[in-house]
Image 1: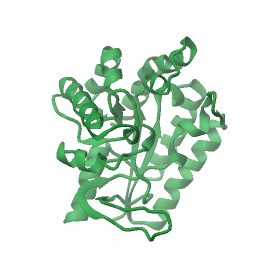
Image 2: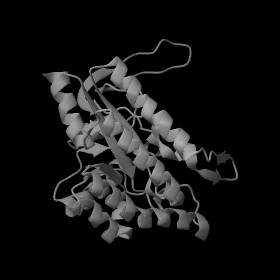
Image 3: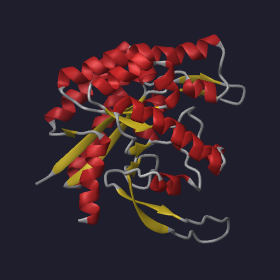
Image 4: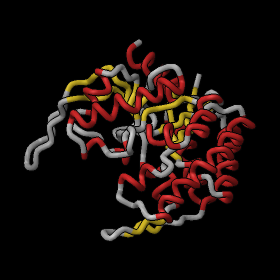
Length: 277
């Protein structure tokens, strides 16, 4: 019987992403602060629809916004690992990456009673060590790679990419990859960011973006009997009022089309059963 799963996920960065990029003046920090405020309206939206989501919460947010972080956990949502300081692991040494992994996981365990089962890297940029570290620390899944759209797959380690040579595929592991896409992330569609090096000026119409997100689900439904579609959102982005209205419309349409809403852990467990029998 066809089964089409949707995972609503929220990267609860608050100010961490701005601090990690060196944007520590009051205005960019206030943008992250808006995410803490908006988390309440997102939780209300999910509660009213009986949907459990996955929130990827940096350790920074857990310690800086303890009440708001506890509200997410108390509502029954999955808390995923999203680093401590929102530094991409590709920019860290192996020791720094592992220390960050352990530090944030300790806070997640204090908040929820268990360590995180899933990991999402800041800025979706893994290091050559990340897969090994996630396996060593008992993670069920990663959701930072883009090698598929609807079908989870086994993460590999040991890939070799050298200029002028064919790609060498590494060894498949038991770590489940729950694939994502920048096109299904609210940030590049909606945000304005100005740095000395570049300007990101998207500001796309919310309804148009949600229509394309719905179309992605409809194509999954058309082409595969079983699949998982992951939407990535940030409270300080999606939490604007007009975007919340558009998100409400999207979720209503998904429900009408038979979407099964799950946490990422639930979907990853289902995917593991399919991959490993």
